[in-house]
Image 1 (spheres, rainbow, N blue to C red):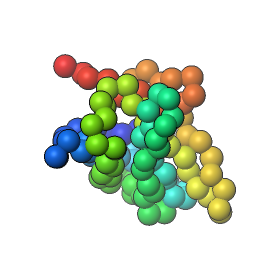
Image 2 (image 1 turned 90 degrees about the vertical axis):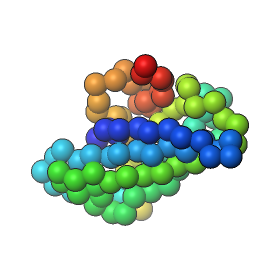
Image 3 (image 1 turned 30 degrees about the vertical axis):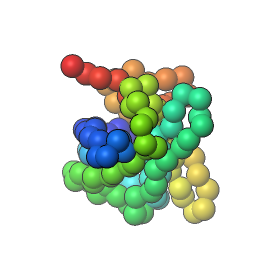
Image 4 (image 1 turned 120 degrees about the vertical axis):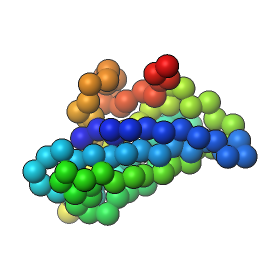
Length: 111
């Protein structure tokens, strides 16, 4: 699983990310997907979780995450965990972009 789209916008100096999470598999996610954005020094970690089973197969679920005011978004890391039966397990993103050794996706400008 990997975000298919990541949009960035700022409102009153508060940065926001909208993630388009696509499930191109044949079954729903076997638990609750937790998605976080953190900085390289790990002084903040923001995010939340999707409802269990989402995103549904062949569907897209949008997620919005706000980071602290004035944060430069370039270099932030996107991580995820899956919660199954009360236990959380890290997820390595499965995408074309380079994934860090810790399984995180570092956000960079594409244009």
